[in-house]
Length: 389
Image 1 (cartoon, helix red, strand yellow):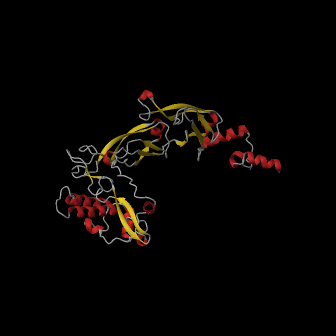
Image 2 (cartoon, one colour):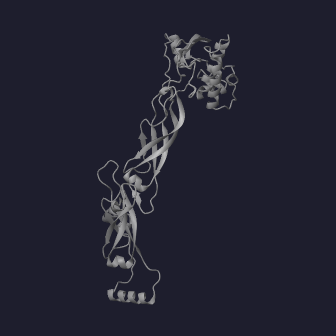
Image 3 (cartoon, rainbow, N blue to C red):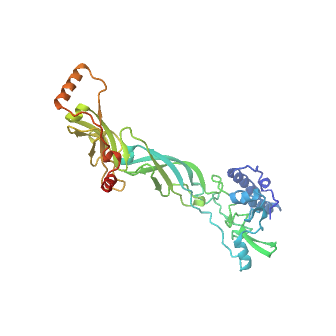
């Protein structure tokens, strides 16, 4: 059945209030009405009311049921039966009421996720970066306990440390006993009478800290790295969550990466392709003579021999000049694709020389032919088709 209690009015917040506003309002009222610090006759009742309001409004599911007009402690919404759930019915008819005990204040912290951009060279050789995280850490004043110095948590006077209370409701099935979290201690079984002034009783505070993130050699873009224990500190002094790092590899000006292999273009003239030449090709290797180390400093070059008669589109493979394999076992290759430039205009002397060259070779006249299997992509299947036709 729907509740008639206005939980928002009890906490003094608007219906659109966010989780932080609700928590701040509850902490203020809890300090005001806690029976251990307020001796007024209505203190205990007021404290139980604001605790119940906080339990509902701080839980997204309970708050949604309450906003829709249903019982926040039931699962049926506006037309529900008002039970605490199927387990409560089973408890009532089959010996129920079995205590689940108080829940622990010590919880694991949340995981954190960041994106890190690295260059191709840094991905190839690995790099260590210091990143700044805005995260929760254990409170240094109370060391995660949440209590003020010289104080400790006290047993909840409402549930006697059990963390839950039982109520009897009358329905068409008869009397049903339900068990739910204690509204006074929120199910913990104890209360923080004197919360730590720095963390407000949560046992952790938000701050910025630096973390060294080590990117392993051979990593590729799209890989997610896991750093155990580098996430947020848990409430109540609980263990840290993990930090996940999504690696984003930046495009290189010269090289294109394909797995562990690298590709680049070498542009040469048609005379160099015909006569042969040598060229210096930059690699991702460090130039040790000029102070290059790992991913830092100048890059080394290798001398590449282009044989006479090389054709446009020909690929020269430099073995072991690619990216180191992530789990060891060698490196990929560097594949150099030849691009041959044809002059768009000739002067008279050049035209005369080329004409004499062509006349001396007696080149055959141009003719139209079919695409080679390699160019058409047919290959094996085209040959197989030819056999049957």
